[in-house]
Amino acid sequence: QVQLVESGGGLVQAGGSLRLSCVASGSIFRINAMGWYRQAPGKQRELVATITSSSSTNYADSVKGRFTISRDNAKTTVYLQMNSLKPEDTAVYYCNADVKLFGIPVSEVYWGQGTQVTVSS
Image (tube, rainbow, N blue to C red; front, side, top):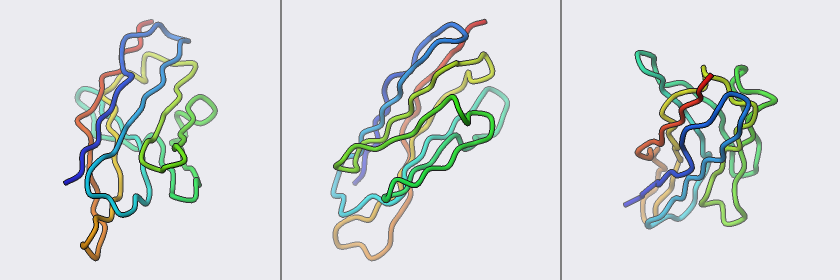
């Protein structure tokens, strides 16, 4: 019913930048908050950043000042601009979205398949 497709991951040297994108599609009535999470090998998935439908943002302390989350005007695409990348940012990055579908009274959270970000030292 809803697909979230991430792109933009890759291999970058420490200090470099990457921009992740996540496009939502399907029978979407409204997307509330969207966010980025990451999971490093052997670790739990953790929040990176979130953005509401009114563009209020929230960041993990570890990425504040380096990462910027944003959404397009149609509110179906979320971006994560990552600057000053560090080796400890290496992880699989997942997009999620709180989506209300047409004809469904409550919203539900959907996840993308993830995109690998590797930062070399």
